Image 1: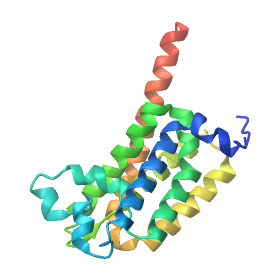
Image 2: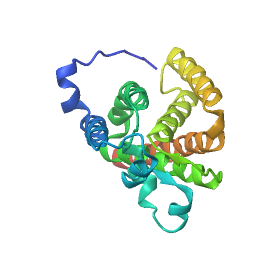
Image 3: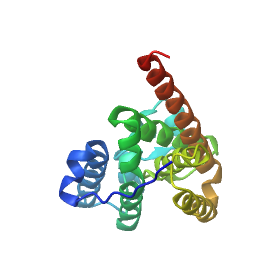
Length: 202
């Protein structure tokens, strides 16, 4: 397979990757309003903005599994997640299309957040870290299928190992999101290939 690296001019990024751009903009807007709320260091403010809290999710507030993907409570967390999405997400939006990529991002993130609750974590959890692990899981499947460059794949494996080691406190949730991304990528690729074969008449 011929692997080519294409540099996308920054001004064309929103047009070529509208979903990734929208996710980053929404996260930035939520972070801005969170900061100007005046109580950004108060845990109750995190909860009001949609953070994952186990007992609240267990009582039916499942929307937190989704909303928390767009909530970051400090500058470092927001920048780290935004940079990770900027690096990992555009290629996947291009490969899978807007709708499927958005589904991958949201579902894997929500599954990872559910894993946080399943771990019986008694704290407050925010951010799209689990969605990022989901994207890594997608790349892991693409590597095994030979769809991405081997050098990039090896770098991705190293990134996954380091990320799991640094985030060992939430290891179960991270692995769950990773597996969710892997399985969803496998299913989506199979559907895409099946559809392509049907269209070609085979």
